[in-house]
Image 1 (cartoon, one colour):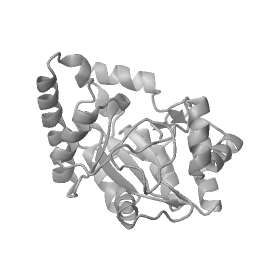
Image 2 (cartoon, rainbow, N blue to C red):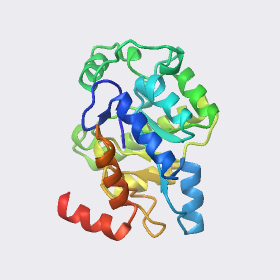
Image 3 (cartoon, rainbow, N blue to C red):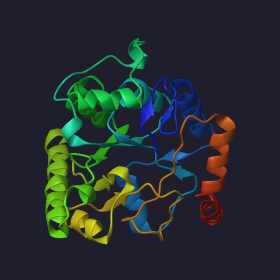
Length: 261
């Protein structure tokens, strides 16, 4: 699980050099990177090929296109971007790292401030950039809801909460399908917040796989409605190799998460 790839490394961001190091290492170690179509096919077959990993990005920040996309393409990897559809800029195709882009991009804190001030188009992906990445086969765009709000905090009545959640998810899924001409089947919960009724609402809207912020690995025996993910962050080769070693072994992953979560 990543959010940003830029010069402001943090627990949800990774600087450009370290992200390239991580992607190069995945290639050298023979890892196959999956998109959500691959995931659903593997789940249907009930067996997991060796050395599979899914690279995911939350929110839909501009640096995913400027920095992450060319690096992923360079090393032959796929990745999934879960976009907040109300934050997507309408149009625009900006310069990337592989096209000579060198201007520093805002940190996560600065991006959040820009969104709050109404200038989010300067730090968020556009539909044109999403279309280009989707058509390349490198990036698989899926939903991170339409508004990225805490529905559990907005409404006291549960029925009202579920009705607004249903409308939000439906709008997000519909926009991705309309603007990118694809079937949107996967959702990532903002803030990692959900419950059984929210899961039922998401499946009613049409989502087949739901991604959480719970740490750990996934096996074909695990539910597609509660997919685990691992925060990577701005770590070097040793820490990255350690994560791969631990979480490529389900028994070890479960034991590690129990002790250190």
